[in-house]
Amino acid sequence: MAFTERLRAAWTTSSSLVCVGLDPDPSRFPTAVGRDAGAIEAFCRTIVDATGDLVCAFKPQIAYFAAHGAESALERICEHIRRNHPQVVLILDAKRGDIGDTAEMYAREAFDRYGADAVTVNPWLGTDSLEPFFARRDRGVFVLCRTSNHGSAELQAVRDASGDALYETVARRAATDWAKRASVGLVVGATQPDELRRVREIVGDLPLLVPGVGAQGGSAAEVVRHGATRDGTGLVVNSSRAVLYASSGDDYANAARRAVLELREELNAASRR
Image: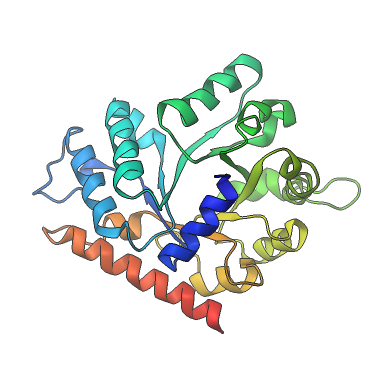
């Protein structure tokens, strides 16, 4: 099944646009879980199982695992998601971007080692750096376009002689070129609603991975209003800290589930307006 078909099935099955970002920080784990690197796998499995029927995607961020030498735990978590929650799309948040054989190794890492359905990539080095990811025709590629961090405008909003901002150039290239080669989507932050609207205008129905809702202050209703497609989908709306650390007590799994339910309903309510 092509990635776009898997994603559409995930939206339908879960009645959800929510993606839970797995960014495990042991220093923030509840005492009952433990605070060492060995607790990472147990914490993430618990969050996954508490929310798996409510989300369209999980998005593990590789740096949070690699920093603790927990790549093997990430492998097992990805396998757990594929085996126990097969209806949920698995997006590896790696933001890879390099050339030649190195890009090919990054593609193997994402798709072969971790078995991801999709991966985030950085387009800064140009189309040839993305081609090893595009070659996996059954997988998805989310290209960074307009990110949610405060300093993103330093480069992404710079305009060329024709008046186009860099993020608009990336969006246009995705719609006119890259989407013909692979199942391509774009990463556009919730904290930039006007730019989100502009990207949607440029790319039509391409899927958008939208971080920045929750702890970063992005509005779920604004994301839907500016970024959803005509059928009320087209979005993978990520929330990480607001879900993972909804409670610091023994009820952290139930609290995470409640946080996802609230976000799902907020997004769905906005889609119905």
